[in-house]
Structures are given as C-alpha cells and as structure tokens.
Image 1: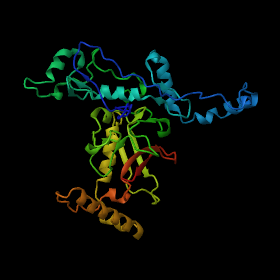
Image 2 (image 1 turned 135 degrees about the vertical axis):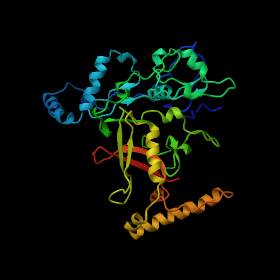
Image 3 (image 1 turned 60 degrees about the vertical axis):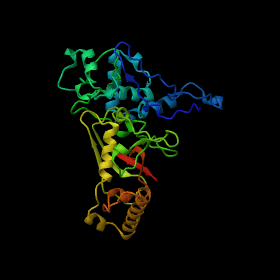
Image 4 (image 1 turned 120 degrees about the horizontal axis):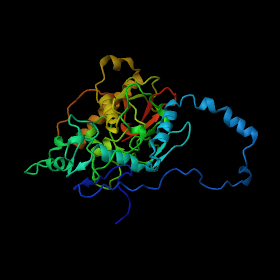
Length: 362
C-alpha cells in the first residue's frame, strides 16, 4: 500500500472523543515551517557586518513600512503579555509587512475545537449557548448525546465545555472572538486558511464548482473513485489569521470586464470561517442574471455567456440521462464560461483592502 497522504495536513480526518477518561492528545506538528536561512550564499562576500550605509537605509524606511501595521503591533503586544509563548507551536512571526506563518496543525486544532466529534456525535462548540459550561457535569453531557435507542442528540451539547479529554481552543490572540469596533488586519497582513489559498498549478485542496451548493464541496486528493465531502470541522476553521469580520471579494482574476458586476461580501461578527467564504461565493454565482444585466454586456460577452450556458445544459443531459434537466435560465456562474472551479483567493493587487477570486476550468 502506498504511504501517500490522501487528505490535507490542515484537516481531513478528525478523531472522535469516545471517552472522558483519556486526556486529549493534539495532532502532531508537521515540520514544514518556513526556513529563516536555507543555505550558505555561494558568494562569501555577501556575509559581512552591517555597514553604516546599510543601517541608515534599513532604519530610514522603517516608518513607511510600519504605517499600516497597527493591528500587528497590537498582536505582538498581546503575545508579549500572554505568558504562553511556549504553547504557540507552529506560529511564526514573519516580520513587518508579511503575514504570520500558521502551521497546518493549528488550523486543524481550531477545527477540532469548533466542531468536535464527541461520543460519535458532531457538535457545534464555537458559538456560545444559553447554558453556562461552568455549572454543567461534562460526563452527563457526554452521555446525553446518544439517546436510549442510539439516536444522536447534538442539540444537548453545551458549547465551550472544558475538560482534559476535550480538544482545547488554540491559544492564539488572533483567533479570539473579535470585539466590535476593534481594528481589522489588511488582507496582505492576513494568513489565509490552506483551503482558501490560491493554487496556481496542480489541483486545489478542494473541488468546488462555484455554481453549486456548498454541500457538493469535496476533497480533491482522495484517490480514484473516492468522493469525500469536506468535513464540518474543516468548514468551521477560520478563513484567516487573524480573524476578519468583513471580507469583500471584488474581482475575479483574468476577467476582461473593467469592473466585475457582482462583488461578494462575507460577514460574520464572530469571525469569518471557511464555510462563510464558500457560502458567499456559492450564493453569488447561483443567482439569476437579470435582463438588464444581460443587455448591458457587449455582443461578445453575451455570446460567450450564452455558449457557456447551453454547453452546461447539454452536458448535464449527458451526465444525468435519467433526470429531467430543466432550463433554469441564465445564472451568474455562466458569466465565468467553463472556468467555474474554485482555485483560491489572494489579496487584491490594488491594495484597496479587497480580495481577488481565482477560478479555473472543470
């Protein structure tokens, strides 16, 4: 059997908490953090003490480079005062102007905490419930998740319940619940979730047709003839580090139109998740195109969109021969032609605080 991994390091398979007698063991840290120094220079002359001229140039540009890093300075101060730096395994501050590195195990650790599988029942743990977890017996809650006839009861879970056998919340300040009015990081200061990072070549981590419902999202690398839906724990992971409460996806890469007609807003006061991003994209492209919108396009765009629509219509008749394929009308996804597969996000090159969506062919 091949030893090839068929799920992403940041998610995929999640263990279940089947007993409260065994302390929780976190996922191992995969040693793939970025290297600060990856080899001796081929020219030894490059290694020397900093000259006065180099020092003046370095210090002279510092004020400009830090002008937009208010959030990062706050973040560093939080780390300095947390007293728990030894627990931040997998977090690497890459310096001013660069987003921090978050190792796969930390993204997965948040998924474990947000959507743990307890007593073989997936429960919602990230959103606080009406019952305080301080006055609850963990064992009673654990046993209540399964009814007398084996029926699962996830609604009986008490969110934020703490116990040595349960996965803890990653102790990173950027993933604490955002406060109303607190400063947000710019896109270029954020680290994107691995499921959302732009994949310029090869297969994206997930297979996501942006015109379909998000329940159709599956892992890309699962082996031949195997289809595995994206898990709830992976969908509940943060979309970024640090948390954002607003994301605007204003552009689609390689679009020839001067302005993309349907910018997408992703909103979540408690911190945007991977699922929030997927839902916003799916909702946007599954909507119908109005007659006024279609009439505003030039003839070339109208012909391209019409061709994409009918190609999809006849393709579905071939794929689903026993299903009645209805003429549902033109939708926004048809605007993309045959490039309807999610390829990831990047901060907009305009540096205007928005994001750019990348899509690719089927």
